[in-house]
Length: 148
Image 1 (spheres, rainbow, N blue to C red):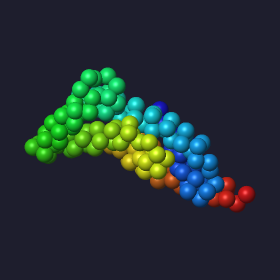
Image 2: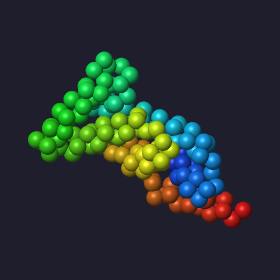
Image 3: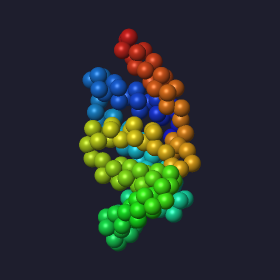
């Protein structure tokens, strides 16, 4: 489970890395852990709604990429025809699950953090954290660190 403290730590560490005050190797390990947990939450949400995430298609099903793309296309068509908010959010989550699975570089992983934090499904947020409060706390921690 991703907590507010996890989000604060990730945001703080990304900021410090961008300022040249945090080692890239350590940040990459932290991001991999954070994104792995986020991917688990996204996959659980997709499965509860009858849809598979990218990781499932690539690691379990023989059809892999093609099966994922077919399911994604079907869901996109349903969202267009019905105008359903839930279907549109599920399409976004499917695409996010693919991006997380394929993220290789540190820059890719950093870019995904914001998308993960703001990810929603039809019934609410994937990570139930007050992002504004987490950002404020992260900024305070960065300021304390830089004053040393």
